[in-house]
Length: 212
Ligand code: AMP
Image (cartoon, rainbow, N blue to C red; front, side):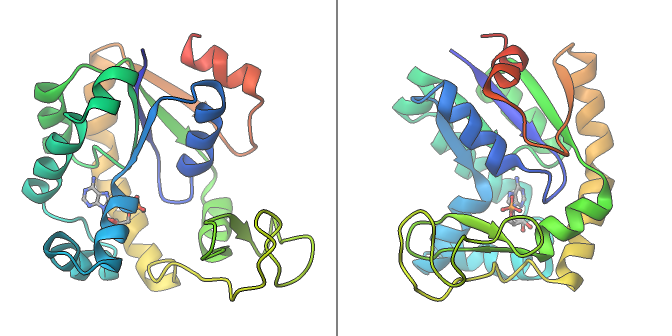
């Protein structure tokens, strides 16, 4: 069973890397804190309303809110029995220390991507609201303009509201401020792996990284 943290700036490809891990480990739980918050926001739950102001500005939701949410999530059967990929958590040293108390992990995978590519990945990103397939106006447009390759719907594509230039600047700064102590923390534990993820990797390479 694998317990993996995916770490990297916004636009590093954590979502894509998670999908690739799911191809080799189909039962592993993919836990994305950003997705949980967005789902709560859509349903206007108290948690979603609490997170909204921070997300709009590209700031971090306070640690106590995130830590409580993750304690609950990681204690669910799927994560306990099948392992997990953490996508977007921990984002602060405090969150990493909380995670240590909840469960052990195999490694922290740091996805490294040059900043000019990150910016294009984020500002060019849009998705199909029907099936969630992600496209990019610079790198990966649908084959037929306005029609989703995956589900064939010609519904209007949507962009994340925090994928704009102003919020991105803040999200990148927040990442830079918090990344160093987290990376050192896992390096000291001998659990750090740094991966160049400018280009998508093959499943063979993914398996090697995961030590499968
Ligand atoms: P993401 O989809 O991972 O880019 O997350 C979107 C937004 O959700 C972030 O900009 C934060 O406002 C919030 N968020 C997600 N994960 C965390 C976390 N671990 N700690 C604090 N805020 C988070």
